[in-house]
Image (cartoon, rainbow, N blue to C red):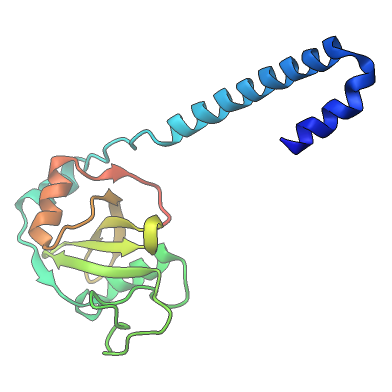
Length: 186
């Protein structure tokens, strides 16, 4: 408000029509700017499209028996290697479900950016459901990795609803279309 009064004092010698015209122009500019910001915000808040699981992997998830895996170290070595590649680090930046470092009972002073919630593996595939980030920026992700002794590859993944506790609830979310499309970061 003080800034407007200061500007008005400076422009007073030019007359009221000049001042009012300038204020009208400012109002139009602010309205246009506000409309642009509102449009951008509305577009950003639209839900991501469902990440429908494609044909063959869908059949695997639907028909295979997934045994629960309660620890990062319980995942096949190839799956851990593929997670390392997807996460883009030199170390596997994911803690156990209790927050401890993989394979230890040590809970680090600084929380890792990912925390395993639950995972499960069949004879050919692993579903990994984890929390990514902290605080209000926290999201939950699910990954489907196809693995054999000779090869492991990322098949599919997306943003998942929070609060899934078991591998069966993760599988149900995957099959129902509750997972939203995402290209990462994983």
